Image (cartoon, rainbow, N blue to C red; front, top):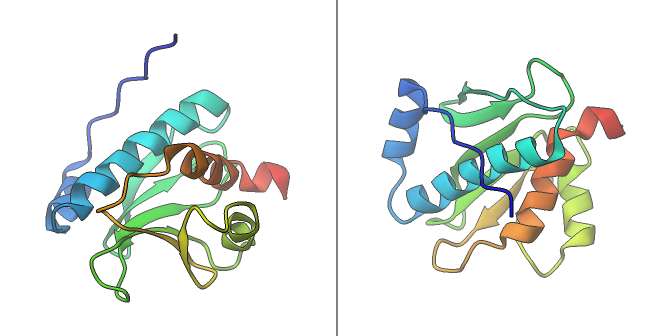
Length: 140
């Protein structure tokens, strides 16, 4: 069994954004962060990822390879108390996720997958969604 790759150190400004999330959303979004890096390492050809802030939220870009679309992590405004994995609304990513995983997630328009921190993270399905986002420009 292959061991998980070491996570990069979180940039200071991104760490501050994570610190601003309420618990348990913070813990769940940190797990999503881990899954983003693990997925990128597993599929290959998309890293190194750039970890930065976009609109004040942690964002993950395939800046070097340009293989994918930006993934951001944030809070849902409605319903409150849920984490959000946000995608570019000009892509068909969320529409594709909705078709492939209608029961696995709560969706917000064509923008986000919402995550209830009181429910275990559907890591297998979320990893597939992240892989599609990280390779979006390769597949488009």
